[in-house]
Image (cartoon, rainbow, N blue to C red):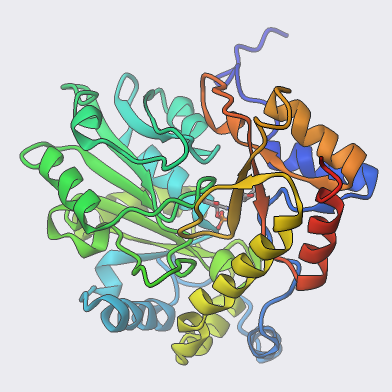
Amino acid sequence: MKFDSKLPNTGTTIFTVMSALAAEYGAINLAQGFPSYSSSPKLINLVSRYMEKGYNQYAPMAGLPALRKILAEKYNRTHGISLDPDEEITVLAGATQGLFTAISTVIRPGDEVILIEPAYDSYRPSVEVNGGVPVVYETRPPDYRVNWADFGRLITPKTRMVIINTPHNPTGKTLDAADMAALANLLEGTDILVLSDEVYEHLIYDGRRHTGVLSHPGLRDRSFAVYSFGKTFHNTGWKIGYCIAPPLLTREFRKVHQFNVFSVNTPMQWALAEFLEDPEEYLQLPEFYRRKRDFFSNAMQESALKPLTCEGTYFQLFSYGHLSDEPDTGFARRLTIEYGVAAIPVSVFYSNGMDERIIRLCFAKDEEILAEGARRLARLG
Ligand code: PMP
Ligand code: GLN
């Protein structure tokens, strides 16, 4: 049978590839972004309790009202934003689903979507499978800054959406109020929408405050903002998150959501709603991860790899161009096989494969694992 693939250039994600290689060679997996520790026992007990109490049938399509209500309170507390839980918040089966659903809600064949590269790997295929045309704005090391005037030159009458990600995977770069103002300014008077991936909203360091699309009125009115409990509460395998968007966009989003997910698992929604009653559970995260970042970068001083700045996320980039001119995919494989530490090559996040000889390591691991990873990498000479 002849099958004309809608995604002829899409292969297996690098996260699967490197995790499989790590398993094959028994390497420490600092490649795929997931914590080595589990969620709070309190949250796990809440899930079991709700299951035992019989909260096991379909949840409402948009998500449990109690969870949406406490999420609205969360943004009120942290950002002074008032959200309508019924009309502006939808519970997701993970951020990936929300990103895909938002793109499917908006993008028609031929619509242009501006991506900022390096870009998280789900964006491009999600645009392409809907017939959209990715248009790339490239950022470069060491600071991965967006020059918004240059970015603005990519806008055409066909531009339908812009995708941003802050704090940014893989670079650890964060956007600030000036970035939001510049983007809002570019989009003013257009019908261009923004999809903002903010799954690392609580993983932000050195006195920075998370500044996403909700913080700017001009962006909030035209944006889908996507979040992930997997990142926030150390349970990436639970695949649960939420999307915040103004009522008009939420209504359209739910038309698609109800037919590609319908609703998200019930006991976890009850458990998360109760767990979120204590804001400390998320307010302590920047300090928790700052300590890990600093522990790891300290341990890595023994290694010849050169760290770049990490403003947010649980990823630390390192450059190795002074050690080798091997392509980063080969270098990451070699680290896994010969040094026992799996890494992600950053070139895979550029559609043209731009290779600046940089790898990404994940520091969401127990200190013993980070110390052992750093000890192994200290052999790099
Ligand atoms: N966006 C970014 C930037 C991510 O790093 C990830 C996952 N690591 C996701 C989205 C997907 O989140 P989820 O696992 O909730 O689908
Ligand atoms: N987002 C995670 C990372 O960047 C991986 C998610 C996945 O494996 N799809 O490592």
